[in-house]
Amino acid sequence: MLVSKRLKRLLRLVPGERRFGFYRFLPFFFVLGGAMEWFMINVRIGKETFYDVYRRKRSERLYEARMEKGE
Image (tube, rainbow, N blue to C red; front, side, top):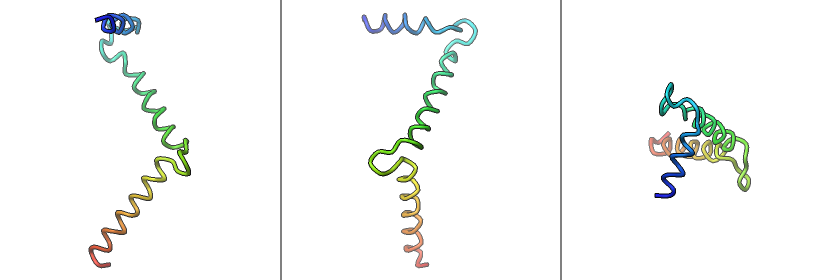
């Protein structure tokens, strides 16, 4: 109950409730998505970024598909 009241009070502080309704939170999600994308591109965990792993896995899948076809 207490968390719900605090959350409601916090959400009411975001301007634009009458004009935009729920969509007033859209800029926050846009910025959050951009921050996640930047993190996945630029931050290395160990020796690799998210996209390094993605490219490697994609090339492995393509190689396996070619081997199954018999090329």
